Length: 58
Image (tube, rainbow, N blue to C red; front, side):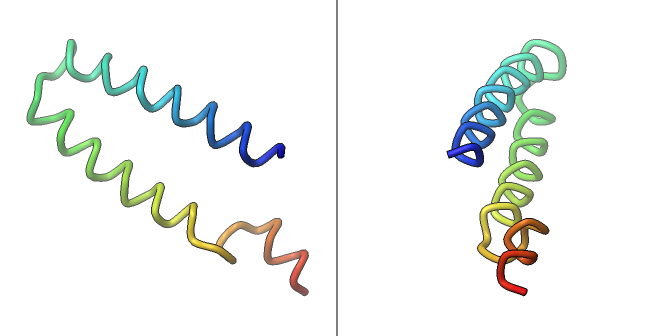
């Protein structure tokens, strides 16, 4: 439950940052940032990569 709330909060923050990037930097930079963010998101959402999850398994 706590994790889902955190993910939702980060998603909202990410959306706000994207809008900010568009107004500040324009499409190209925003696109590059978005690519990096999705790579990070993919890493974070992969099971077993969170330190807390690792502790539970041990």
